[in-house]
Length: 174
Image (tube, rainbow, N blue to C red; front, side):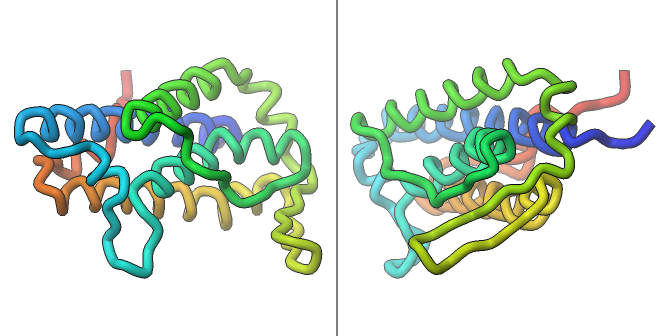
């Protein structure tokens, strides 16, 4: 049996967002143990020209939960602002996205194959996709970029993380 649209979207998103939730938890514990202000982490950047940690987390959610919404509606947009409430709000955003994705039905996601999805930024910038092309060439690369950047920011702040933290709960043969 082949891999389904559900497996390569929801399956990947839930695994990696679960890992991100664990990474965020380790970040919060590190901050508490080392008297680090969580606002410093929320505002941290890899480089001054890159967007902050908060944007990385928001974007990871946007390029996962938002991907499914875009494949359903046919319309995709850039991520919005970070929620009010700092680090705990980012943790809740990730937890809520996981729950939302877990509620998706495989047959409904698989039925989206072939649907048109239009990414639009302003009036003149438009990228037309099929659902599969959108997922594979736009959303998954963005999703992994932002989750790995969030991981990198926490690691650079001293949080003890390893590759296993990033990988999350692998789907092993039973």
